[in-house]
Length: 460
Image 1 (cartoon, rainbow, N blue to C red):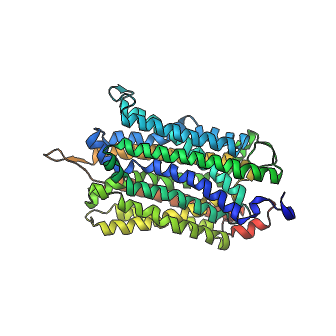
Image 2: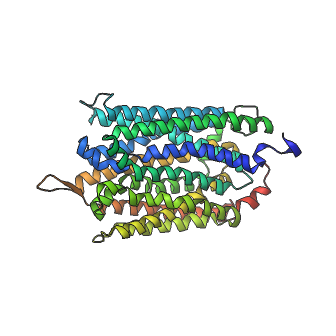
Image 3: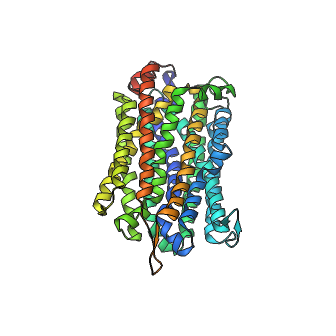
């Protein structure tokens, strides 16, 4: 222990430094996650991809997480082996998967031929994205656990909000720069190589956190075991404790439905701008970039409000209701002004700030700290069903029901039906937000109470 019986986590500078280091790693992950979104049209024109190919590739992010239960095992690994080992493994997988994806698009791997009904290029790029998806999602679980470790009893919602905000900067940069960078390199693969380099820097950043911060705080707090900080050793029976918690499933399903309306939408948003609002391909990512840019300010703000004023369940419900309104307005026909699109995207950014700012800090109120690694992993696993299924569905719908080929061979898409699908998912998410609010009143989780006031009376 350091002076006066305090540990490093009691230092504001140390807490925020730790947050900044791990947030950079997630920013790099989000950049790579969204880097291909503005390039759907380029992939169709230069690589011969269809919307179904793009949907399959985008859905591949969740392949291994959903069907091989990699997120579940990632959560077990975190609870058993701890933050340092699991974090390095996850960030290493991100780099590996990103490189496979780069190799597929650069021609290092074979491009001709068909396997499992997919062209080699699409298949290899999808496999790389799936490996990246394992690392990215497990890294997200690890970073959530890092924040709880450092900020429990302090500004936890604000810290989680800031981490989300920094990560969204990666999305904003990807939306703004992907098309110009791809054109500068005259190839999609050049952009991907830049992304691989950024992820390698994120890996080094996490290694620096391990050495400079995590080992030191464990020594100070007397935690010499490899676990993530709980005093009792993890047992497999803990999974049952999490899985039989009704409140946990309400927040997990809310998470899946909400993010299914956001992340898959962003994958198609630049193409929506081209086809519905007539924005030039080179600038199609600018309007979608307004969403993450807005969250940079608003997510920490709403987190601060939750920390000091409470109303977490209400904040989530308001965000979901805004999401319904935005997708309903996007689905309207006959309105194709880019200013209208920009206003809706900024409103979506507000909704995107409200829900995560209250949702992630609410989980430690529902689940005991000892099972947090498993709980976060299970929530991310459930979320990945949406990240896998919805992009695949949208790609198939676009090809089968929304595609028009002009006499000159130009392809265009009517996005009304896809937007109605997103609207339906948003309505379902509102149902679970209402159920969670009711369950909080029944069980007394404290979602409507301030985080800091509640945690001050909670043993650390």
